[in-house]
Length: 185
Ligand SMILES: O=C(O)C[C@@H](Cc1ccccc1)[C@H](O)SCc1ccccc1
Ligand code: NI
Image (tube, rainbow, N blue to C red; front, side, top):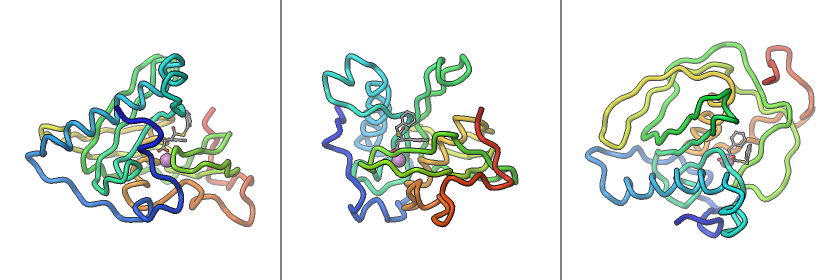
């Protein structure tokens, strides 16, 4: 199982690389790793398991965060976290194929399992995105996301491009709310 010791931290070069696309048919190792990543995110939200294995709560993880510079992510939002509908995805070669002009941000800013410090500031992201990704069988999916799932998936896709959340904070005015950004309510 994946634990915090497997997660690389700010300063590790892999976090700043553009990850390689995966090719299909997927090798078994990538399939297993992706499933382990989803299990990690779910475990991290279980108070008992998080305590037992010293896991930091997370809602998503990208392969580069466990030093695998390949383009796949896992996201898990429970019903409680996502307006009564569970959002659980493993995405291979995810990409944003279109997005709204309008932006959104979490009022509390963002954190990252690979960043062991608090970085305050508004992280503007597209309010709505249309993404394309492949599942482990190589089936293509297209999905429109908004609200929290949209924010989390954009945070994870950023990891595939070597981008960390604080790269998106305005250094001159980190807490300012840009005119075109609506806070997620
Ligand atoms: O480091 C990661 O990629 C996991 C982040 C994902 C994230 C997405 C959107 C906004 C903030 C972070 C972790 O989930 S950070 C910890 C966390 C846990 C619960 C809710 C928000 C953040
Ligand atoms: Ni992160």
